Length: 457
Image (cartoon, rainbow, N blue to C red; front, top):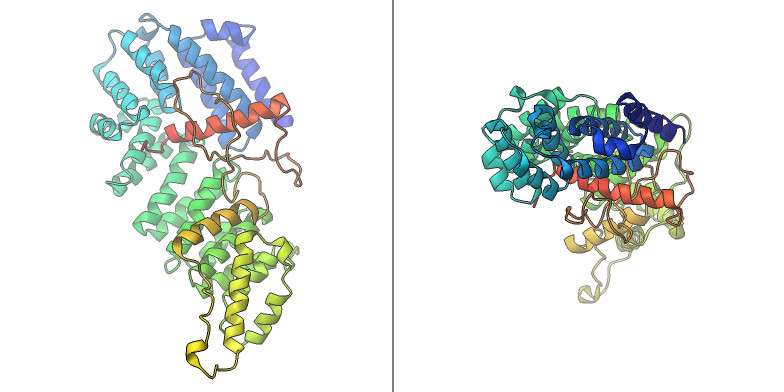
């Protein structure tokens, strides 16, 4: 509630400073660049962890869309308004509104028109056309507000074909817009690209910076996914000490869940040493609060030693695990581990042909994906924002997009609990109008994130 009040006062001050007593009047009379700047302030608060600002973001997008649909050539004589139009587009704006506004603009700089063409191609899903137009434009030569967004978009578009250039562009985005949603997105994307390139040093540096600055961002669950995958992929290049340094900056609950996820993935992939390390860290806890009673940590640590010389101890440990506290996927892993342990100590069969095949520890790739998804959804405790295990399916209903023609958000948009939510809460009550607005706004956040750097498919 306190964060919501602070953000509400911020918007009220913005409107009063412009001399307009209500959002309705502001929508009609404020200049587009003023509205877009207000949107950016709200988004930056969200990136810093102020989830209570999300409904205000949705309202701001609606106001900006209405204002830009009514803008005429006279409005765009001011270069700041045309740049605001481009920033709005790259912030998750309605592509129909952007295209219509560009068609009404007159006497606009040729380079700005080229950027507009690239942005429109980007918004409607023509990445090849977008990069062709945007490639020769140097973001560092533009005003910082526009250059930062352009660097982020170009970096995301080039991530597959030219990852080295993509990382350079993402660095420029961070340089031009520190402490903002743009920097948050650039860091998050840098982590994924570093994993693809096998660049452990870059992965560790970007992960450290993200945890330091944006651990409470609504998008931090996406970072957590990339971080866990990166640790598994780069396990030969990242020391356990470096991993511990990064996770030590997290709060104890997030650190625990990260280690549980790493331990599970490592156990399934046969990375016994990493699985044992991560399981031990998950069990040890921090500040004197151990997690030794967590059945998942016990299971994952057992998986890493299931064929060791201490098999009887492992069998005993497996037998004491409370199955009722495991997800379906982890119960399947427990069954497989117990079957393998039983095979290890079973006497030799008199007829080899009659010996049943031992149960595999790791399911086949497709079934493992399904098991992981099931476990992610139900197996680990819900941790606000940073490490939600799998984005929850979006509730049915319309989006908060400014116009019906805006792109629909992803069907698996993450539902992020605000920091003030009770730990036992299973989710917001959608019968409450405020909570319903929050749910819709989270779907809008997913849409904005796609526009803020996820290359269209």
